[in-house]
Image (cartoon, rainbow, N blue to C red; front, side):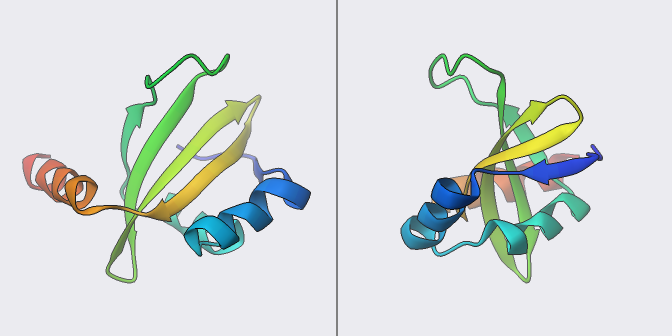
Length: 96
């Protein structure tokens, strides 16, 4: 899916994501140019539809959570995928 723009809460989320996960939202945007394995985020009711996306950049699988705001993609969280998520991502790639 292509988006008109990307956004995140610069003064809080962007900074805390780097501190918490060592992943910069600016750098993770290239993930949207790769093949993404996407699933709905149904872990709880967030008051909006969220998507969990897995993709690979420079031989590293990442987990990205985002929501749509109009035609804009609002990034919520980005981190390196854990082992279980990497296995699911590669299994999905084999089956497509």
